[in-house]
Image (cartoon, rainbow, N blue to C red; front, side):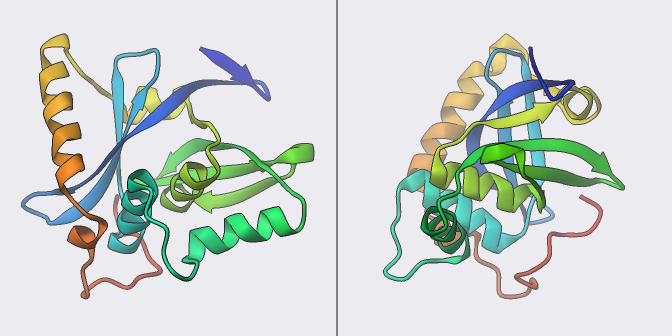
Length: 174
C-alpha cells in the first residue's frame, strides 16, 4: 500500500472495458496491481470508446477530447503525474487529476482513466473506495481474467458506441 498526501492508496491497472449484460452499460474494470480486488466502474459509451482506443493504441486523424487535453497539457508545459479515484458518492465515482507542482483538478473517473492511459501516468485508488466498492477475485478466477483479456484483444472501440446516450454524461446511479 502506498501513502500519498496522507491517504492510503493502491496502484490500479486497467484490465479493459466491456458491456455489462443485460443492462447493456459499459464498464471499465480496474485491478489492484499488488492486491486481490477488481474495481468495476460503470461509464458512458463515449468514454468506453476513448479508453478502448487508448488501450489499442488507436491514433485518430484528428484529436479526440482526451487527446486534445493531453496535447494542451504538453503545449503549456504541464505534466499529469497521476490520477486518483478518491471517492464514491451516491454510486458515482469521483477522481482527481494531479498535475506537476501539486495542482489538483476534479474529474470524472472515466475521463481521468482515459487521460491516464494517454499520458501513461499511474492510476491510484483510495483504499476507502476499494474497501467499499472493490470486488475480491478468488485465484480460480485468474483464468476468467485471461479470457477477458483475450476478449478485449478481439473487440474494437466502436463496439461500445451507443447513439441513445448523451455523450457528456455517465449513466446515473453508477
